[in-house]
Length: 315
Ligand code: ASP
Image 1 (cartoon, rainbow, N blue to C red):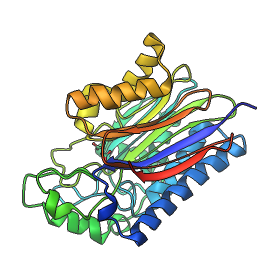
Image 2 (image 1 turned 60 degrees about the vertical axis):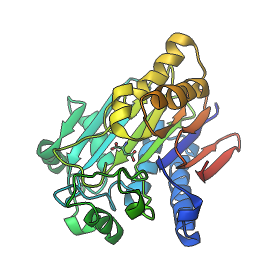
Image 3 (image 1 turned 90 degrees about the vertical axis):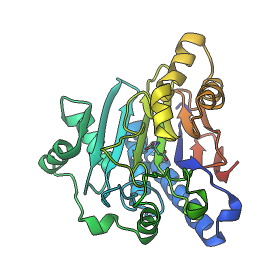
Image 4 (image 1 turned 135 degrees about the horizontal axis):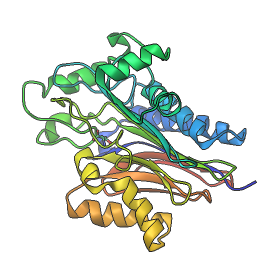
């Protein structure tokens, strides 16, 4: 059997140890551990990379601490609009949803789009109609509500400011204690197939139907057995302009770079050149993984069948 592995993230940004209480840090690490274990269990039972990344993401979406599914951030209008994408590196099939509401696990809906529609990307009400037709689990608004997200939004809702989960534009002081996260997972299974998935509530106080990089195939999420599976987190607009996830794949395909070399090039050179703060996780079809970021921290964890594992928050 070949090496299999999984890596996950819970968002990147200005995540500093001095801003964290021991209890909160413990809760984040537990959340990451639960998710990486859920994905790894699928791989251990010879499940597919797609099912492994989905299992890990569901755990993170159900965890109130992370900005995806339950506990998603509030938009300017005071509601939660979520984005998610999944891609199978074996055949380049992909599914994505944007601006959806009330869907308990956006990654389930993205998977349904990938497997059971003739499309790749559905948005807004149409995507919600598709969720209902496919029997995807819905929840009332209250399910997604969390007091700290509400407070985070209340602090800026009357302004034109918007806020990334971990990096707060113009409102650094106000938001210092509020660190949350977009979530992602990448995996390589025992057959050497790889997959990527990303899920997010996006930015606090976002408006005009703003959508970030997370659900955009090639920007926030990408998988191709011949190169890599990538899930990004950070300032979405810059990741879209960089076509960040696909750029890693291109550097591997056309320049012969390794996974880590290609990710370093994109995160530490290309994104920085345009002011793109954040990070990404990746695997290749040999089971190598890398966790790379240019911000102060990134919630992250990984586990490999050779026994290697890691879990960390700060630099
Ligand atoms: N990239 C996400 C977005 O722009 C946010 C994040 O990763 O924290 O929507």
